[in-house]
Amino acid sequence: MATYHVQNFGCRATQADGAAIERQLLDRGMERADAAADAEVVVLNTCTVTASADQDARAAIRRVHRENPDAKILVTGCYAQRAPQELSGLPGVSLVVGNSHKHQLADYAAPLTSSGGFVPLAQLADANVIVGDIFAHTELTAAPVFDTDSFEKTRPNLKVQDGCNNRCSFCIIPYVRGKSRSLKLASVLREVDGLVASGYREIVLSGINLGRWGRELMPRSTFAAMLRAILQETAVEKIRISSVEPMDWTNEVIELVASSPRIAKHAHVPLQSGSDRILRQMHRKYRPWHYADRIERVRRAMPDAAIGADVMVGFPGETDEDFEQTRALIESLPFTYLHVFTYSSRPGTPSAAMPEQVPVQVARGRNRILRELAARKKQEFMRSFIGRELEAITLTHGDGEFTEALTDNYLKLWLHGRLESNQRLQGRIRSAESDVLIGSVAAVA
Image 1 (cartoon, rainbow, N blue to C red):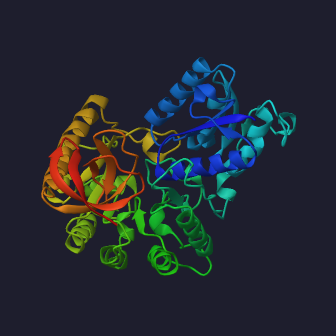
Image 2 (image 1 turned 180 degrees about the vertical axis):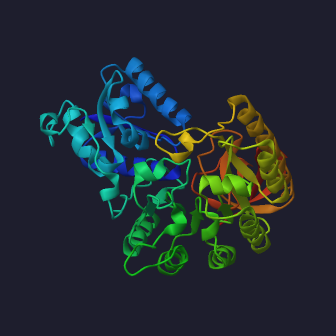
């Protein structure tokens, strides 16, 4: 039986794509290998949001080829869609499949194996590149449900939306993911039911621009309507929402998340910059005061919620004053964590041609300042729960003194004792050490 290994890079949507790829390959009769070194076909599911992401993918290709020179390396994902020829020329790469054809990946992978079958390589349009017009895709099909003994044991990602209609000046993603498109509600509910039947107790809803779910469906719908339908028509114990843009954290969504014990108290709201001037240059659709209003409303509605943001430093033309506005806004808001990125020029985006590119050392210094600020805020948030109880789900089987868990409000928790994975429980918090809470089981749900 032919063996495969899938390695994913990047966002939750990519992780969900990887799970769908694995199901495709299993359905074709292939067997999963735990390591790339043991696989006949290695699928690298790439990201291209930054130059560093591209670099990671190229390094992985070189490593796989070095450790397993006989492996057939198949590269897919966003980098494959953006620069297929660049990837196809790397040693060891047998095939490049863009996002445009990712749904057919298993058909293209099969001929690479010793067992062969399906689509002969000679019949492909290009010997080792399969990439089409991503904007031709107008519908999103369901990602297959996978079983409890499979790839992600406790918190599977369910991708319900893909693509983006925004055109932020720094972002390459719309060009490699295509137009915003949503999984139809009936399919969303069917997928959730399937995951619940397979034993999952927490499901992470993901997408490229998740809050835009339903806008292009006929009849038109909304993200809040989808959440309500999942709560009303499925038995899922917990929904966690991945990143949602600030303008889509409507009062209705905030009220729904705050009022339902079945939705994790967690809001990830991309910021990018606290400077109005830079936000306009970025073509973002909100102003700093709009953003602050949304965050403050989330905190009032959910006093214990995790609130996180993506922040970019070093955007072209960002001055010391612009950066200070960003730092001051972050200082003033109740964030519990940040994902801080240094601007990376992406070929083909408007910002790549902008003057006044910020020196790398300056951008790195700003990055460090925000990371230190974020670490302080996170520590303050974590310490506020010492002596209290938090709802959590165990992520792994405990095999030592502690079992790893994740709290409802997105904090890492180490629980004393050996516990089974996928258990919902109440943990009593004893201490906060570095970026981890330490506690014990108070009750099992």
